[in-house]
Amino acid sequence: MLNMAVLLSGSGRTLDNFHERIAAGTLAARIQVVVSNVGSALGLKKARDYGYPAFHAVGSPATNAILQDFDIDIICLAGYLRLYDPPPELARSVINIHPSLIPSFCGDGYYGSRVHRAVKERGCTVSGCTVHFADELYDQGPIILQKSVNLEYEDSTDEIAAKVFAAECEAFPEAINRVGQKGVDFFWRRVQR
Image (cartoon, rainbow, N blue to C red; front, side, top):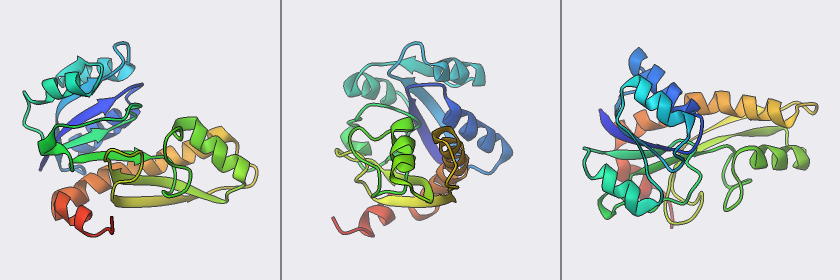
């Protein structure tokens, strides 16, 4: 069972998903701590309501100072809208979810509704999400898992976002379970970098 730190910037919808799946026994992990770079983030309130230690910290050094007090195997970026520089011992243990099928619509500036708008503007008939390890470049780390969703020509940006988020709710816990089963190094070894 993996010990997780969850980093977030907003409403905590992914935290909700993790909490529910841990309670249901379908996510083999324990949330040790939640950190947000936004002091007013709803996700921080939710974390405290769930009983998790929850902190506001701006920047990687401040975040890492908090994490050093907890037993952490992986760090999950759950809507964390900053490039994160982890402590050296966890450099290969940061997991992110991106709302497209990488390598499409990814990289600096592609996040949230910007991704779905770009997908809509391009006329894509398929989108999805990618769970991957994060490194010093946006959306470049080894892919753990991808899930696709079919799009209709008439789908609005909001409808695309809803379809992709439903896929994210399945993909992120499944990816964490895979990392728990196979180990972090498996995924870094399987890609050509």
